[in-house]
Image 1 (cartoon, rainbow, N blue to C red):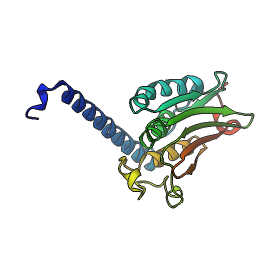
Image 2: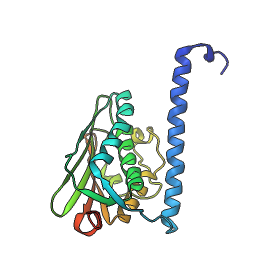
Image 3: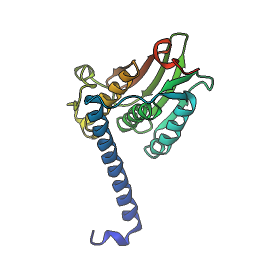
Length: 206
């Protein structure tokens, strides 16, 4: 505050810190608003015909700069011919941004993240896979609970507010889907969104 303003390197670092904290605060406020709307029953999905390939590609491009700045390798593996789906694009973006943000936040230097999707005749699956800290067995049964925070010191040091995964699971449930996780401590995690195509995603989408 006193002398750093004259040093370009210090100004750049300060701006980056401010940006990160504003992004974190924005995410927290938006998540709190969405949780409040879901729990009061006023948040209803506004479904529209959506090209899932385009949605995932946009989210990938939005996260690539942040992941690269943290020395992470973010890749995408999504078939261009994925079926069009009937979802609330904005709500599903919240879910995927939360999962990608976590994959970046809880990863390791030079780690990797994969955003992928696949389908068959019955289900559509979207996955976010990382090579990060992983989740211990004592935590894995609780991570979708509201405000739950791991007791692991390394995970706690990365920040967070314990709302992202809770909100994501609620939004996926509003689409009659399921959000699950597979993880190994010290190896990484894989979060999977699974939808029943015949029941939800393709209804009125053709």
